[in-house]
Structures are given as structure tokens and as C-alpha cells.
Length: 395
Image (cartoon, rainbow, N blue to C red; front, side):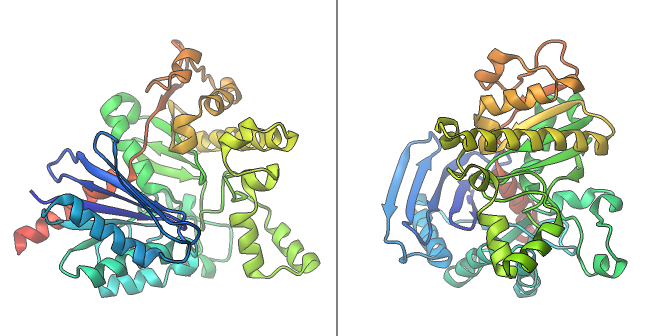
């Protein structure tokens, strides 16, 4: 049985994982190259979470392409002669054309490259990883899995902006992101509680990038991110929803051009911008600066407001699920959000929340609450297996 490889390339890091392709998809090992362009560091952990590889380089020694080649070489060595069946990739943007995973070929790559202006901080890095593997191991099939695809099930009206039809038809619409995470949560919730999964659920993917998704019967009906991953909730360094008039004002009064605005809304806003301290929630909690506390308060406030918006889009709410780095690990944030949603009938059980149990709502709560660790890499492995197997059979 050949293993499956998964690569999840971000703006400054590349995560990767190897799975057994046996229907259950147990992990063989997983790792990441982080701090690309600054101080690249490779770490790999086995299925029992024991570190088995650690290596570092000078800041300019690895870019996304060479880091991907390093990951490939490391994986081949660790597999001890076992050949990889296929490589699945997280690709942030699938545009209007790609509503489901697809086997990569030159025509697909060309289409995906044309979408780089829609996700300039992510799409080029996703494609760099695909290109690197195509060059180093052209015999290995590759599959692109899209962060936007899960949201294509939304009603047409939920994907529209109130702009001239010509612009909508040209592709300016609400795409939504974090779709692979939401798809995985939908699958896991069906296993944990089929009855609740079949109802109205709001999933809070909270981390350096944060968003919410409203699901009805496991399908996306609304989400907070839209044309880009800068919309919606306040994030680590991204502003979230911002009056477009602010951007016009900054252009007129501060002389900011498109690149300066891009740098502002993606890299200098959010928790970092409001606090002036850090984009890391742990550092903000430890800080005595009033601005740090204000940043956390605004982060929670925006989430609570948007949960109500998602519930409205779903026609009500039966459950909330917390996931992502902050959502899974920060009991205080969950408690603060819970207090903000008490008017909806949500009551969290303090001891369960602190213990980070899977089910954290109090007996008698009108809304169920879960903490579920997301696994985008496993979702990609499942999609890759489903696409590659028929190709093998035809061959």
C-alpha cells in the first residue's frame, strides 16, 4: 500500500504530512518548514508526536520551491523506500471554475496562476510547491484541493456583492475561505453527533486567520470571508471588515497606493495593529498594556456579532463548534464568546471548557457547543485518494 503526501503551503511556512491510504488515513509523520525568508527550520514528528527530524538554515537559503524539494527528499528518506502514491495540495483559490478537487495538469496550473491576483499572499506559494514537485518528481500525480470549494454550495445571493452585474460576472463575488477546515469539521461532527450535524451549525475557525461558517445539514450557507481572506473577522494581522471609504480616504489624505494598502490590511492591522504589542493571543494575554486587553475585547466583540449574522443566514442555530489554533486551545476566548452569546441560549460548562472536552455546553443549554481539532491535511488526503484511485484503475 502506497502512502499519500499532503502539502499545505502558507505565506511563510509549509506544512506537510504523510498518510496511509487505507480508508482510515492514519498519520505516518507530519512536519513543517517555518520562518521561510527569516530563519528556515524543518521539524518532523512521527505518529506518536515524537520529533524525529530537526534542521535549520540561514534566512536566504530556502524559498518555497527549495523548501518543497527539501520536504520531498526528507519524506523519501523517512519512508525507507516506500513510494508515494500521490501528492495533494491545499490551494487557496479555485475561483468560479473549480468547485471540487482536481488532478493537476498544465492547463489547470495556467488557470490557477490567473487567480493569483485574488489571493496574492497565498496562491503563488501554493503553486510554487506544485511546480517544485512537478520538476523533482514528474511521475507523481498531484491534486489541487481548494479552500473556496466548500462554499460554492451557498445560495447565489449569499455569494453576491451589491455591485454592478458586469463586475459580478467578471468574478468579483464572495468566495469564502478555510473551506477544507470547515469540510473536515462537517465530517467529524457527523461522526460525533449526526442529529446536530444535520441541523444549523456555526463553526468558528479562530487563529491567525479567522472566519466563521454557517452550515445547514453540513453544507455551507454563509461565511465571513469573501472576495479575499482579509474580510470578516478581526485576525492576527488582518483588519477584517472595513468601510471601503477608509481606503479611499487613505489614498487621498495619506497618499497610499494599492501596495501600501495591501500591506496595511494584511500585515499591520488586527490584533497586532490594535494592540501595538503582538499578533499572538498568548503574548497579548501576558501583556499589561491596556491596548492588548482592548485588542482581545474587540476580537471577541466582532466574533459575537458575526455569530448572530451567521445564525440569521442559517435560519437559527443549534450548535457552535470552535476550531483553529485559538478556537481549539484558548478556553478564555471560548468563555468570553460564550458569555456574549448567552442571549441566544448558549451556556458553556466552565469545567468542561477549561478541560477542553469535545462537548463543552452546560446541561440545559439551548445551543450545543463543541471543540473539534481541525485537520485540513487529512481532508486533502481523502480527496486525493478519491481522485487518484480511479486513475490507477483505468491505467
